[in-house]
Length: 182
Image (tube, rainbow, N blue to C red):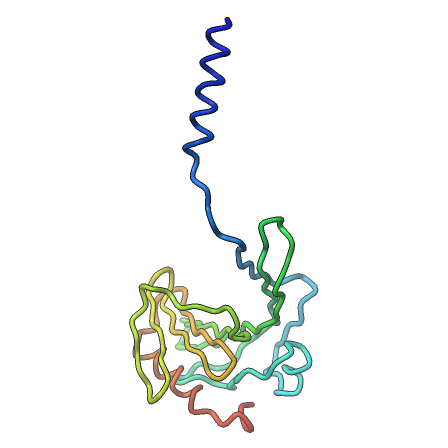
């Protein structure tokens, strides 16, 4: 019995020295709460400023015939090593739909303040003037970019919108005049 306890303690001591430690200080979490603001019609820039705390570009339609369908305010934050929420910020998540007979395609537009945002290392760089766009097919077809102090992402979960289609939507948004963004 004493040999088993000694073996158990020795094994435990060895395992404690081989368990990897992770240096990450925080984890980014994004959620949409049940109390969040939802939109059935496209809000104007003043409403977005009030609800989200910034003025993202939010077109009524996207290239390729996609029309605004619905949207909501999101909230994201980092969690520190103790599980406390830090760096809280709001964003938008808007759905655009293209109806073709009985088939509907959906593209999601997300935008939030650019602080702390990064692009996937597996992205393909698409240059548009001075702007860099990052196209990815990791878990969905997506294209993301920073415009001023706002991070934008267009995403197609079903992967039915091509790289060219998403790029055309991104270029349209980049070229939008912010004074007439609505």
